[in-house]
Image (cartoon, rainbow, N blue to C red):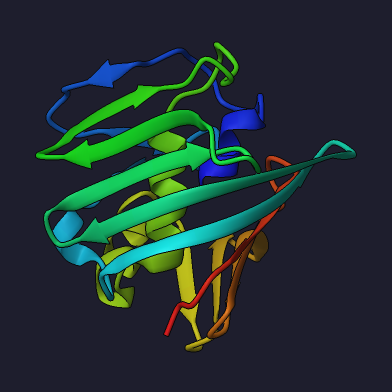
Length: 179
C-alpha cells in the first residue's frame, strides 16, 4: 500500500484531512468513499517488505503496519531501518507525513488501496457498487471492474499480496505473514 508514496499518479497534496467522507476517484467518474476501519477482515500488526513498479521504475521499501477495527497506522522505513514517513487513518481523519513523498500525493489513495486488499468483501462490494463499479472476490483474488474493463486486481496468499492498478499503471507486492 505504502509504496504509492513514490507514485506520482495522484492529484493533490494533503497532510491532514478531516473531511466527513474521505474519497478517491478510481476512474474519472467513480468516486470511492473510504470505508471506516471496522470493515477490516483481519487485524494486522506486522512488518512488510514492499516492492513496486511504476512507469518502468522499481521501488523497494519496508513498513510496519498496524491495522484493526479502530484504525490504520503505517511507518515507512528504508532498508537500514530509518523512518521515511508515517500514515494514520483514525476517526475519519488521515494524517500523513513524509519528506520523500511527491507533493502530488494524496494519502487517501494509499488508504483506498489498503482497503481494496484487506477489507471485508461485503463492505467493499457495496462501496464499489455505490460508485458504479463491480467487485469480484474468489477468496485469493479480487477484481474491480468498470463495465467489462478490469481496473484493479489483487492476488493474495499467505505470504504475499499483489495489487495491479491497470488504470494508473502501477503494481506492488507486499511480503509478510498474512495468515
